[in-house]
Picture 1 (tube, one colour):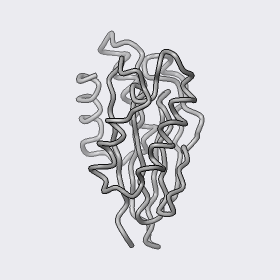
Picture 2 (picture 1 turned 90 degrees about the vertical axis):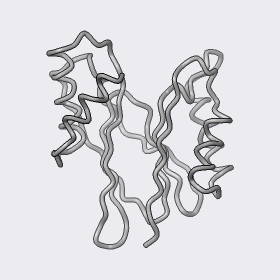
Picture 3 (picture 1 turned 135 degrees about the vertical axis):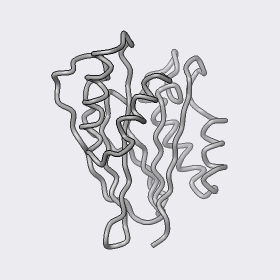
Length: 170
């Protein structure tokens, strides 16, 4: 993963291309120069809008969907058909997805290690994570993420990573 992460950084360094184009380039690069196994990824960018909100643009290579917490404390997964994981088929197209975000929205990106449990369906882990997000929505972002780590619904057998972003006030 460190090698993939470093390649991704290099591809992003001076580019403003859509997330899907970057993941396609990463997939072709991995196919050409490594023997890395199949891996999932989600690449996203948040950009300001003229009206004071924000636009989230993302592309998913078989990764769990981002989770949105609105300022009204509604929680929902940003469902979009994920493309194939990296390392499966470099000829398949990748797609971008877009969502307008209001000020003070929180977007949570996470690895499957946060939700997977050998004794439960993945959907149960997703539901439990959404419930944790709703229950602790009022916490400052740093404490919010710590609670998600501490109370995660997984069985703890896989690496866990969380990235949570809160859009600024208008």
